[in-house]
Amino acid sequence: MIKALETIPETDPLAIPEKKAIIDRVLEENGALPGAPMVVLNELQSRIGYVSPPMQAYVARKLRVPMSQITGVVSFYSFFTTAPRGRHTVKLCMGTACYVGGAPQLIEKAQQVLGVKPGQTTSDGRVTLEICRCVGACSQAPVVVVDDDNMHGRVQPNKLPQILRKYE
Image 1 (cartoon, rainbow, N blue to C red):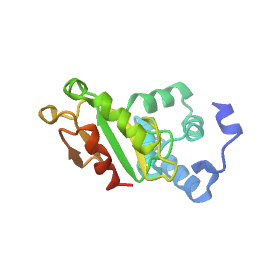
Image 2: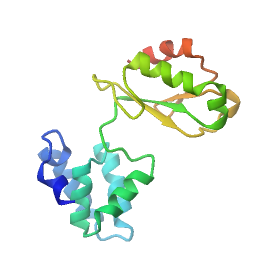
Image 3: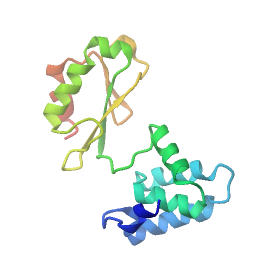
Image 4: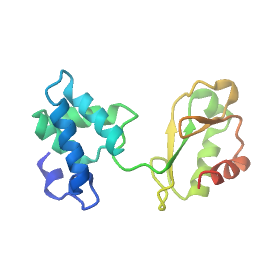
């Protein structure tokens, strides 16, 4: 826990006074609540956009809980991220129907078009590529979801660049 706080990158929210003030406010407002770690982390994800490793160490120290509890929460729930996301998030479903319907080929094509691997964000900060489990649209497999509200079904690898261009 201490090592993550020894060298905080200048781009980390803890090193940016306005963002650190938000972090401290969230801790102050929610630190005494039952289930405080989850509440605090959820608020930080919402307000800052991600929960970096130094932020996790800071939260653990301020709440006086083991670092393993904080990292356990962040790594268990898929809605937490540890790095900034792009302006748009492209999720490729890897549920059974999508996998059988060609999701691995879509992932390969997305990596080729965007130049990033799943879990990474393009260098211009526009698109984050993610893999997810079933999105509940099995009849439309394989499925690509952009920004949680734009679902594209029965996507073929040759059509993926056209979908991605809208968000680049």
